[in-house]
Amino acid sequence: SYLRQYAKQFVTPIIHQLIDDPPAQTVFKSLEVLAKITVPVDGESGPQISSSSDSHLSLGSKTSVDSKSEDMELTKSPLTEEDITFALGTLTPAQSKCRSRDRSMFAASIQLYASNHQLLGDLSRAVQIMCTLQPPEFVFASLAVELDIFIRKSAIRKRKVAEEQKIPEDKLEQPFSIDLRFVSTFVQQMCYVLLNSDETKSLRRLLQDCIGRRDLENERDQRRTRLFQILLHSFSHNLVSSVSLCLWAGAYRSAASFLQFIDPLDIDLVCLLEIDKMIEMLERPLFRHLHLRMLENDRDPTAEGSGAMLFKTLKLILMIVPQSSCYKILRDRLVTTSRYRQSALAAGPWVKQRASLNDTPVFVQRVLHVRNLHCKATWEKIRSESLETPNVEDHNFVEDEGADKRAWLGYKSKEEEVATKARFQADKRLVTSLTIEEVKDSYEDLSKMEGAPSKKYALNKEEGKKMEQTNSAKQQGSEEEWKAFWTNAAGNEELQSQDANQ
Image (cartoon, rainbow, N blue to C red; front, side, top):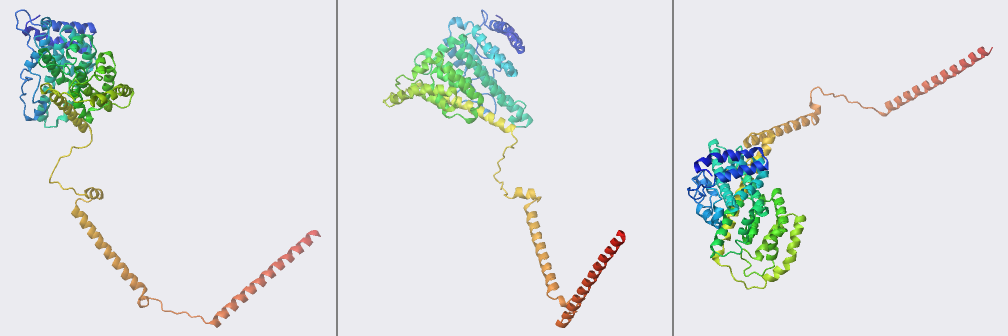
């Protein structure tokens, strides 16, 4: 172990050794060194949970930004340093001695993966190693807190750059949606490790039914509830991870509540694939207690951990997924218990849940707040990549219906179009009137025109007969001439033939 001032100098260089995708043994040794040098030495004060950098971004208070960052703040944030210390009170003294003095190691890890997204495929292995070297409760709480700090810092930084360059935030080289997508992938890997790894078995036992079967009079249950709030604060960046955590912790009513208000932009191909994996995981022995929970007789069907709320949550998931093999698996599971659930709900009256145990609005508001943030960033990204220009509302603008037609015809304005049409009508009337006058003068007063012919021809009957007789005589004479010609021609041919015979 090193003192704080010395250990801080080695955290970032050791973390950055993971950039070149080293072998598993190198990764393990690097994280082991970090775990040892960040543990408090003898004589040093106890572990301080706060991060070693950016202490001004205290999680329990508002960040020092302008009013535009109000959407990044919560009215009641569970991530205060006192709450984190209280939640980690479940650790034994031996486990507390193994945890780091601060979260600088986890902050550096998040910065590494945020700058090198190609390493996210091996993130689950690194988290498993961290849980081997330090208590998994401390690892997951630290990662959740540092992810919240990372996304708040990113929002503030992007907003300042956009204001300096005087451009919209979605037009930046790396918009805010990229960081949100990175945090969503990071949380997905954390959820996978939480529910599937042997290294997190103690954390799973601590979180199991911490909301559905809790008693706030028990201090341990209060610490478990606070730890669930801390994890849900960051797991909200991934919808399926939020549902998985709520199902494991028994917060069925919270899961059903925010699934009812899901945004269509949240349902994409990646989300549907994650839901398919979650449904397959629900059929494993790990979640066998959920199958039996739906058959229990509830004292209050509206309680967080009731079988009725679990049944409702699974029905909502069934309505989201398309009809595939996972759909059939979940449908068959619900059909076997649907008849019992109907009879159980009709058998009331029920005992109402105590108001002191109802933290559902706190959980639901956090998830809906983060999902709205993701959907807003997704929509801005879609608009920035499309060819459509954003609409600027102008209440004094009056739409001109014929503007497109005039532009296509080549008119500059409506006045020019009206003037051109009036001139065309005037020219048309002028041409029509001139044409009619010329026709009247030409045909009705033809005899009065200068140079017009005035001879009249008249043929009587006698002249007509004489002409007919003359024409007939000429025709008969021509016929006689042709007969004589052909007669002479035949005689000449006979004489020539006789001479030839002689």
